[in-house]
Image 1 (cartoon, rainbow, N blue to C red):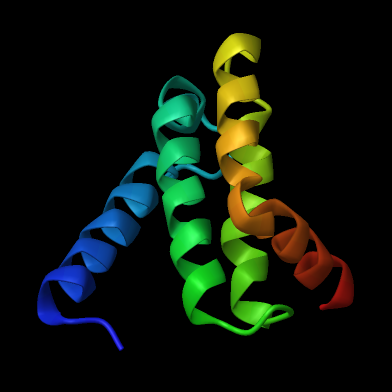
Image 2 (tube, rainbow, N blue to C red):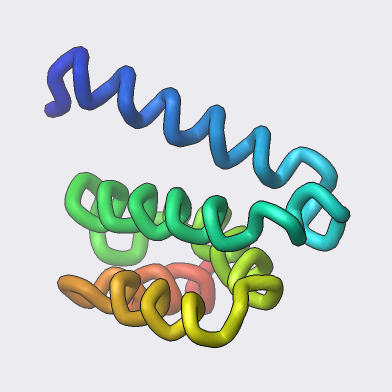
Length: 101
């Protein structure tokens, strides 16, 4: 399991994601900070991919938020975020979880 520092870091990351996506995925604040939110969501997905089973339903919400935020990211940054999300099959397992649940 995670130690206290990692638990605190995870809590801070989730609070930042909530703050950046406070006005739904298509609001003005979310559009303006989409690249930051998408980066944080990729980190969250990578952590969840390491901790949870392959087809866990807990991966669905962060992955759907990531896909919604990715629509508002500039194309050049979006390519890098997509590459980062593919590390260790994270994108594949999250997509399969979304499809399953």
